[in-house]
Image 1 (cartoon, rainbow, N blue to C red):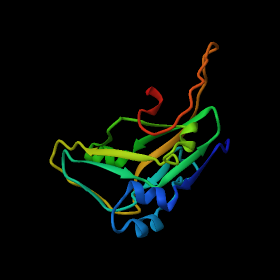
Image 2: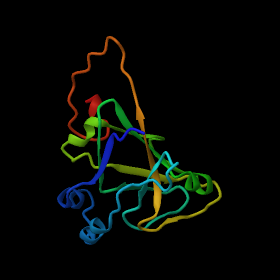
Image 3: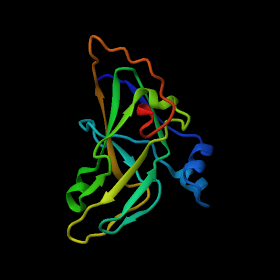
Image 4: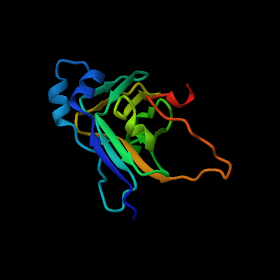
Length: 163
């Protein structure tokens, strides 16, 4: 298998700017880097940085405290953990998150966020304890067209490449 990426934490200052709560320092200190559960796992589990409770229909924006350095020609796809999706219809609001290799150098340090919704049709509340996996990321290689002339430079997060 190719080793094409490295997970890192964003700086403490970046995390505090994105999570301006009084417990930001202790939350930051407890952030775990994503990892695979088994040698056969494709997905890297992302862990909740703090307790999350979502009643049916509720949404939360989660600053993960994580950034990823990825080689050119690869990207990271983000999905909800399959068990949470199956039991609670937990969904990423953009369906699949795409982290491009150039996101790492953005003004926000490439801080990965997840916006999740409990879409339970049965009124179930989802509780995700801090340190529990809630999302998974899979690295994927990609190609470009023969006539590709993309020269833009990323400087931001969500929607920044269309501005």
